[in-house]
Length: 293
Image (tube, rainbow, N blue to C red; front, side):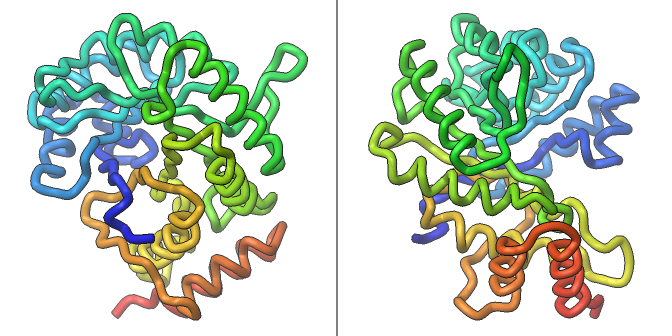
């Protein structure tokens, strides 16, 4: 597998970033425009917008302001149907050469979001982190449950009229430094099952690399370098399993790592661990490979 097979989605607006969160809280849309403009000339094909749990009107305003400074299509994360409808209603396909946006994240508990398609066509991004059981949401804790949820959502999307080539599946995972329950291992195995199931032929698998490395040692290490190495390690393992859409940092120069690379060793060992052993292993890697120069 080569990185040329991956479509990169630039993380333009992410409410989990403190500075961006302050911009959103203050309705600093000039700042939001600067964030989006910073992706001009970079390799990302889409821009990812995650405004978080804020009013629907804010979701719409962010879409308008971002589209005012870029012609790249958007990947819009919406927490519910109301926010999705507002954001899609503000989206102008004419500003990105007629390309449809992606709508992230549709799940079994948020299937009503599919109805927004009739107002503005989109590519659905299906969140595989939970499923409906006994009338409520239940977290998927095994690869089998993630895969089963993907099958249910695939069937629903096909019934709705979506072609496989328009479907995106996002297994999701916890940050590697806090993955005590093996969500990363679960997600990689689910990717393999989706890849091997001919019913999903042509469908896409997406991962947010920025979520992978959110919880690392706060001091004493070069965090950007450690993040980069661990994200590259994940790409090296996930691309052969069907990963072809990646939400990533604007300036990251991703690469596939050679077998035996310390970051790959760290990832492989962490995948086999549970509990605090995962955090200890990741922090050991960070301390040994991320010292500021």
